[in-house]
Amino acid sequence: MNREHRRPIFGFLWPQPDPNAPVDDAYEQVRLVRVPGRGPLRIAILVAGTVGLTLLTGTALTAAIGTSWPLLIPVAALIATFLVLLLRSWSIGTYVNDAGIAVQRLLRTDSARWSDVSEVMDESGLVIVTLRSGRRFSTHISRRSIDLLGRSEAYDMAKLSLQRWGEHR
Image: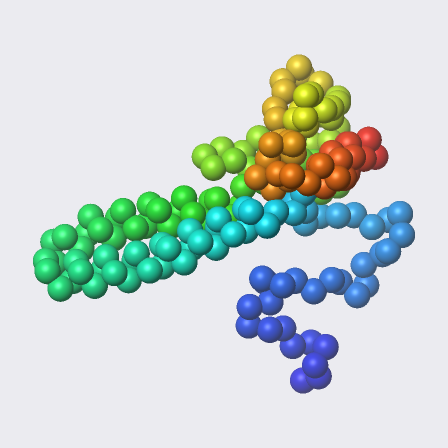
């Protein structure tokens, strides 16, 4: 088997671009792209939360196993709840592709196809998406966002990028 046809074990984490995909106007972005990327403060908080939960899990499970087996079930349920919230926190953000936009929040997701979007506008430092039906939802692109805090140029780039996605679809 030659090297081109082998996939790494965890290849789904780092997908390789399709070598036969068009690179001109015919190209279609199918995979969701996060706009803007995670900021350094968000990454630091998420990494600290992940390390903290890992340490807490080991300590709590060791203590629960050593003292009482019935205590293990509520401790495991509490840890599982925090794990789900932490994993969801890693996915929070505004995502776009050629089909539409998805704003993933901790407990819900707002999404729309680009054909349903009438306007992407800046309202006092917060990017708002307005649909043709009149419904509006905010994105994570904000001057006060943890991803863009203190990076006004990154805010402008993210805002313009999202507006261009909306205009060209």
